[in-house]
Image 1 (tube, rainbow, N blue to C red):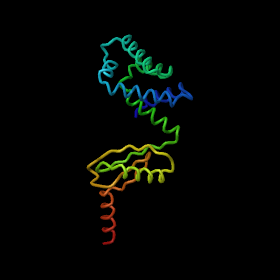
Image 2 (spheres, rainbow, N blue to C red; image 1 turned 60 degrees about the vertical axis):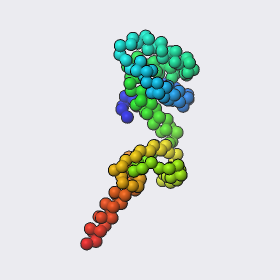
Image 3 (cartoon, rainbow, N blue to C red; image 1 turned 45 degrees about the vertical axis):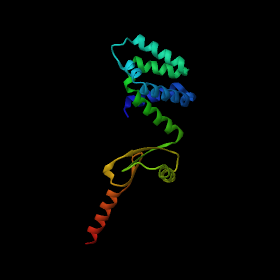
Image 4 (cartoon, rainbow, N blue to C red; image 1 turned 180 degrees about the vertical axis):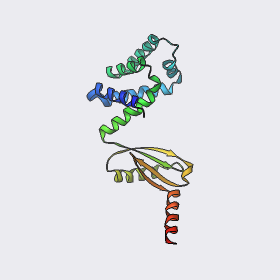
Length: 177
């Protein structure tokens, strides 16, 4: 996440005050709209389309979506500063800031294969116990793991991968002989 995205996220949080959760949810919905409808995203990213037309489109969308004035103003600033192409990073920074304010810890879990629903629930319960607070899980798959799980909680890694277990086993065997 870039420092630019973090600055925008903090500015939005300051401007929104107590309405930050509402504004963040609206921005998430707008971001989803722009990414779902590629043509819309292309209009905002296209430098040959005059700014006035983009602002008109943004105003029209804001009215239809009944955006909070802070959300509408923020999107206008992002548009005028030609940062719509960075909306993805800004959205990620806003979500991270929201999580931090709510005491939610982001956890990234990497597995060799996708986990089933019951496995995810069990893992989430165990990780909540380890972390000691609410968590937001994101899952990734990496065939390099062979098997097992690697979880990243902030800057800490919990490595339960088969590759690491085999390496530790090999280390113990070589120390004995």
